[in-house]
Amino acid sequence: MIQVGQILFILSVLVILHEFGHYITAKWFKVRIEKFYLFMDAGFSLVKKKIGETEWGIGWLPIGGYVKLAGMIDESMDTEQMKGEPQPWEFRSKPAWQRLIIMLGGIIVNILLAWLIYSTMFMTVGKKVISTEELQKNGLFFGEVGQSVGFRNGDRILKIDGKQHDDFKFMSMAVLFGDKIEIERNGEKKDILLTDEQKGAIIKKEGRGFVGARMDNNLFFIDSVGKNNFGLSRFDQITAINNKKVIYVDEIFDLLNHHQNDSVNLTVKRANKEIQVKVKIDSTAKTGIGKKNTLLNFNYDLTKAVVSNVQKKSGAEKGGVKFDDKIIAVSGKKVTSNIDFKKSLSTYKPNQAATITVLRNGKKEDLNIVLDKYGKAGIGFSDNSNEKYTKTTVLSFTEAIPAAISQTWSLFIYNINSLKLILKPKTGAYAQVKSPVGIARQLPDTWDWEFIWNFTALFSIGLAFMNLLPIPGLDGGHALFTIVEMITGKTLSEKAAGYVQTAGMIILLTLMALTFGKDIFELIVDKFF
Image (cartoon, rainbow, N blue to C red):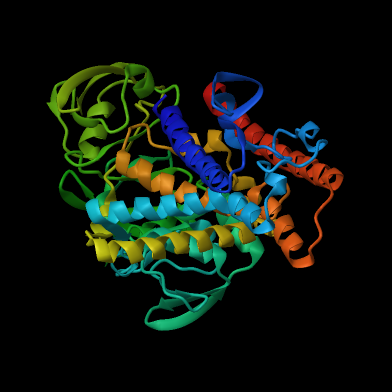
């Protein structure tokens, strides 16, 4: 419900202010406003009240909103009003330049809103940048797909299409937007050229997670291992391969992913002692250990980490574990690390209940959790590890204003590049487009004002960009025909305008039906299957 509340709040703010942009500019030019609606009132409205000449209301369908101007064919498709003689208060009676400003009013307000939010955030909580330099000081870690397209663990990304990216939040997407990636590998500079098919593979299988910080190996442990374990045990920590010390965990991943029928000597730490184990590596996991039967887990510090994932239908979900809970004990025994937590649960049999103590809003609470048939509780953790790479700078008023303008412009360009990627069929990026339903599912389960306002600013720029597209039915479509009229001196006939508006609405409704349908289907599958 918190996710639903967040998306409704964000949509309400954006839609009301967007439509206010049309409303206020229409008022300036003395155009009569017949309706002002938050959300669409197809068939009926939830609330409505007429004040003066304007009907104010809230529709039942949360896919936007509208301001109905007298003398204009818009989303309402009301053509009856166009049959009479133009009146001075009608939209169609106004000069083209005034109509253009009215059409762009919503877009301008959305851009100003993003700029205002960023200015305020930079002056209060500060401008937060995930330092690319700090994060990739020891090189980067790449997923399987990232490695298949040419990257290697330990690479450092220097430039993308000749441009440096100081904020890592945007660098992973910049890789997908770009074509030529300049990297540094073992002190030597190389170029990686990505095809649309390779970008598509990254988007489909790994997304933004295809690249991240290289992580210290001593923070990982074996959480499970198959029958062909050759003496390896759960909770072992691999410290060396063939007597060569393992510094980064990706060295173990590489060993498990890319070797077939190799025998290696592993040094593992078990119960604070180091022992030697000779194992056979088999990427298929049929005759030895491999990624399919050997799971490595991160040894979170539970004094800092919080619950970030609760599996559907798991014992944790049924027992009442919530996001941002801190786990402090199992059956009264204090746990301070993920290994402690897992070891405590391993003393219970599958399908047996365990009592987990959590710290929630400063208060301790005991929860009864029934483990699944594998002895798992269904809990994942996060410690916001990227925070150690985050640089926060509180800006003065004179610094925040230009910084917010730069941020707003950068995100507008980000939307342009996203559209380019979507329009390339081979990337398959179009399949990642989400409706408000899909967006809501990605929002956190806790109400975080800093996140909400940042997301509102980001969404506001996206809304401005989308409405600027020259598609009939959108503000950009109306603006385009008005600009053509200003250049040629010819006005589109009312009949033709009706046809164009109808075609645009069909296109938009079809796209919305597809995106909503896809996200609702995924929601149903995740919820019930």
